[in-house]
Length: 313
Image (cartoon, rainbow, N blue to C red; front, side, top):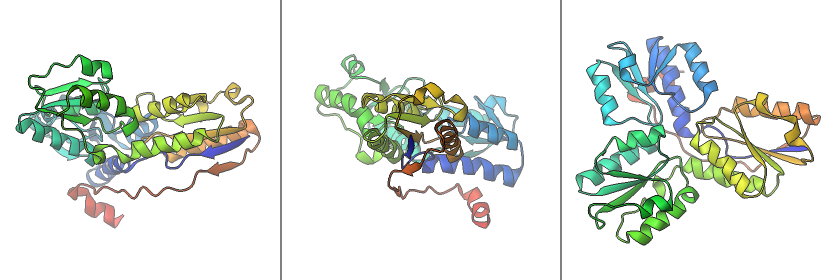
């Protein structure tokens, strides 16, 4: 058996930035530092930050008045920001810049009198934050069937936005349904789609042409990780989501000549290497290869209050 690693895989620029913000804030201000929601969807990352002094809360009310509060990479609604202000919290925004871009567009469309159709998953933290920017003007859809049930006030004044952790492939059927039913709808630009989501899905599709089994390192709560599993299965391969090496089952490897390994955008590389090590233990020092390197060429600036500390480090 051999092991084939996807590329790109794992952390995206938004996740890298969010984790760095929490670590630098702990270094500059000292613990405790409060974080609204899990900074990213990965329990290993969250537990590591918790050991360093981060405290994760679901509501600003759970942090003491005047505490330092960081908003997670998924973004928050204006109501959450207002609640933090009422508590006198000092805040640092770790929202992924791609999510912030969607928030800005939602506000713009609402100001211009559009109703907004948001393509995304109900209950996802990012979706809740985006909908909070124009709650009386946003309709959430997940499927073409949801589009058929839409009844906007003015079908000629519609705009569409998408959850950033969905790819072009994820949204294609819903976008086509919207285009067909509402020909005048303003559709999202291609640069609204998260580059990391699309790239990781493309890499899994390439793995599927070479592997007999695909393992995705990621959290059950991670939308993009679950989608990687779905893509492998749609290509006809068995695929499993694992949070770490301990979840690998020996029977998965029966009659497998090549295992493809990838990771969702919030999974650290150390977990991937742990999976590789476990596979080699089970398969007798299996050789490890990788898909060709892909330079995503994306980096996001840190907030001004942490930039100087990062440069010194």
